[in-house]
Length: 180
Image (cartoon, rainbow, N blue to C red; front, side, top):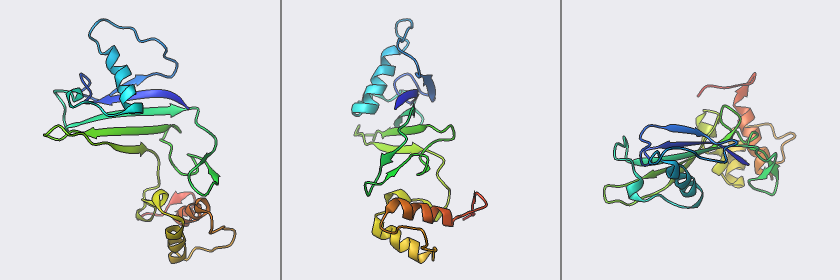
């Protein structure tokens, strides 16, 4: 994978969401005190840890630091479960540009404690019955599969990937998701 873009919000002097293209960047040039170091430190926080409460922008709008990284040159296959290969595209985990976009939010309490939230910004189907599909275990997927009355022909119900695909396909008609 290759880092393509960094977005910062409420991090140090970056109060508004700021996008920084880094696709082929190998040098950061700028005057003193323009936050060149903040860009590198934000990347270090994203990959290696949590920010300090003093990293929260003084002019923040919601008490949380947000650091988002977008990646290209993604692997063609990955293993989510069952040792069965799948892809980010097959699991609907890519954004509208076909890239992997991961946002880490760090809410900071009034007492100064910091927690971490992680989300993938993606084009996931908007349907209540599909909302938590990736987090379900195989037995729960099998139950949902049966409750929905999906035709089992051609579906290996011992493989989570195939169950997820069959459940997703159940809610599509003519290439469009059936409304909630």
